[in-house]
Amino acid sequence: MQTTAVVIGAGHAGLAMSRRLCERSIDHVVLERGQVANSWRTQRWPSLRLLTPNWQTRLPGHPYAGDDPDGFMPVADVVATITGYARLIGAPVRTATTVHAVRATPRGFAVQAGDDLLRAQAVVLATGACGRPAIPDAAGAIPPSVTTVTPFAYRGPGQLPDGGVLVVGASATGVQLADEIHRSGRPVTLAAGEHVRLPRSYRGRDIFWWLEATGLLAERYDQIDDLTRARHLPSPQLTGTPAADITDLNMLTAQGVRVTGRLGRITGGTAQFSGSLANICALADLKMNRFLTRADQWATEHGLDDQLPPPHRFAPTRVDPRTPLQLDLTSGEITTVLWATGFRPDHSWLDIPVRDRAGRIRHDGGVVTGAPGLYLLGLPVLRSRASTYIHAAAADTQALASHLHSFLSRRR
Ligand SMILES: Cc1cc2nc3c(=O)[nH]c(=O)nc-3n(C[C@H](O)[C@H](O)[C@H](O)COP(=O)(O)OP(=O)(O)OC[C@H]3O[C@@H](n4cnc5c(N)ncnc54)[C@H](O)[C@@H]3O)c2cc1C
Image (tube, rainbow, N blue to C red; front, top):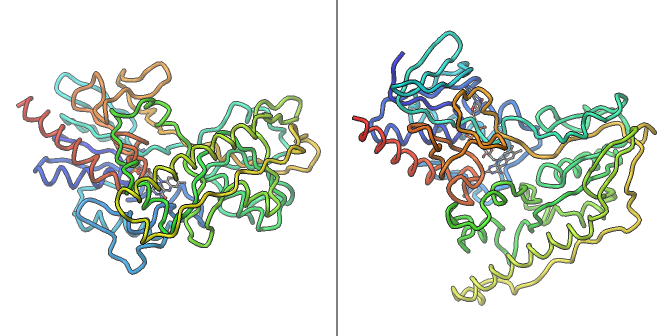
């Protein structure tokens, strides 16, 4: 089959791109290995809610129209939103169609999807930033008596064996799951590496309101000093519920979660944790306060001080100096290790030499380097800091569809 463009992946980003291609009358097809919104159907745990507020969950031509703009969508609503969007825009999606290989050809690209071979002049990789859980090498040394779980497989505390749980990673996933598992009555140890601490709300406004208002989310990828670092920043310690004003290490410690340092090596069944937790927490506090200062300055500059509650600061993170730096995983105290150590994209089927030494696809704001006609979508800080979040698909697809359109015009 011959088409002008192939979009791989029918998450919100692939669908937004489909809409942009339709706007430009570019003939295309969207290939999806599962159903529309497959990641949200199959790779998210049931209690998850978006940590971005509903008003921000907007897609091109499709603002949030529900009656709870300040709420946080559960997974089922995210699926319904994305599925409804696919219907609304009449996206040409072929479901149950897994792409196994993409190759460059003299006239464009060959996309192998099952027995079908599609030929196209342009290909958009919209298969998401979170195609597989990132698991540290130490996982190989976990004693066989301990159950290990990734967020993809986690369905709730009831699925875990009785006993203590070591949650590795204290970003959004780690703090949310540590909280949920601890509430179920299991003792939880949380190994915290570098993290981003932010309050759910500040001076009466949701933190995402501040992130948008101050212009932080709009910062472009080519204006960020350390782009590689920005692209690898962990997700903020937030929960999608206004009830939890702050889901930080202080709150977890107060509940009885034992917080320790970053997991290092596991030798002879003993897990070793970094002793730098206090420094890491001090840095996270510093960065949070730096952002709150920026927010306060912005409020003053915009004459909002009279309309908002006064500025304030949150208590510094308390670190218990008695926290153990090692844990014997063979003692029976810990029966489960949960890897909340992040996610990685999976482009293993891309058969075009466009990767750097670290195996990452080289690109300039989503325009893949060295492969004209190849585009990337849905990765953190792809074109701006907002690219990490759903709503940025509007701007990102606008820019990339425009580039793709010019590319096709030049070829003609
Ligand atoms: C736990 C978690 C919580 C998050 N919370 C938020 C939040 O609160 N707010 C927010 O804005 N963002 C959030 N995100 C980020 C957001 O989900 C991602 O940015 C978004 O899912 C990426 O959308 P996407 O369309 O790029 O990819 P996805 O939604 O992952 O869609 C990619 C699609 O590609 C398909 N696919 C993959 N490989 C192939 C293949 N070989 N062939 C065919 N199809 C393929 C997949 O089945 C999938 O349907 C969260 C992410 C995670 C993991």
